[in-house]
Image (cartoon, rainbow over the protein chains, first blue to last red):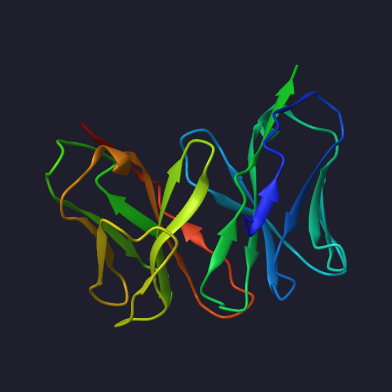
Length: 110
Length: 113
């Protein structure tokens, strides 16, 4: 079983739409959680960390559900520039190891 | 600050050739990592170095060796390249500890013929 699983998509949405991604993780002892964004043929870049209380950064909201072992990312008022692959990342008990999901592809259409 | 830099950006090798991918970071980070990314597979950890002087195997270490030359530099060597090693290679670094995050270099696109 993979450490982190994501729906690969693609999610095709119109500009202005709200879209949500989920990701599940297998190790209940995981400590830290993140969403990264990766543009085509570029390196992953940190989008936001995910905290137990949930956190928001502008149009982006991340939530963590430890009981069900899933993380979510909500994007409101989608922009064309949001088109990218979104990677769910989990850090385990070994603080030096990060586990990446395969990514969810988002296409925002005009 | 340049962040994490990688050289070369592109490389084509013939089967059996060797090469070293270079990575350097100027953020005074303790931990450094090498990943490969293949279509549909996500990022897979090859090796990591928790601190200067230490290295550990990741998920897919076979066919690779690493050297943590100093705190700044972490190199990845392919001794005898195989077509299965065609991939995009990313180096990353992090401070270390429970709540830190990784920062990635721009990647090296390697093709083995």
